[in-house]
Length: 289
Ligand SMILES: [Zn+2]
Image (tube, rainbow, N blue to C red; front, top):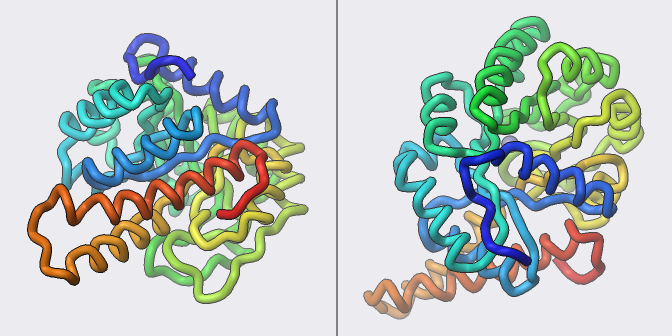
């Protein structure tokens, strides 16, 4: 794998090329959220060891925590040092000012999430962001239908993406990637989710843009593979990373160690192992996850 492409010039085009190439190869790109230097280094190590590439995502709350410039500089430097081809993506943004700051700071791709608004308003907001992002060379993801946020109700069919609306939405907005609601939710599941695969097939038939699966934590690998086979080309993976890191850290702290260079590594190892398994699934390989 060549050096990082977290560069500003033509970044959105290179990012989309990678997503399409992965879909054409029968796989998906894994999009991992990072929260601090340790989770960033841990996911990059998994990609480096596999000779793979990945998408590094930041949510607005992570950017409020780390700072926009710090997050961008950290991600670029860490990817370069790891020798991993990686892209920086803004996850679930609703604030125009934050989107603007990220575009100026060189994000490869941004997600505008107006999924809770009525269809026409979602179209209008998404189209405006797409125009702005495309003008600055970045790619755009939007959500149609509704994937429940953390702590909200479970996914219901009423919130699922309608295939015909997906076609109209993509045409009216010019988005490059479409996040779909087909039975997943953010956070932990109370019971195993079951993806609406026939619906996913109809969405794929209705539009050619790569589809994005949110809320993939806790979804069994067989369902990841089934989703990939039906046009999902980007899989967002966050909750299990936080969980693995926190569990590892809790164990490491139990012995009373105070040297941070010793307490963090076991937590980072847990994240690396977890992500390595998910990268295998996204490449279309067997193996445990
Ligand atoms: Zn999401």
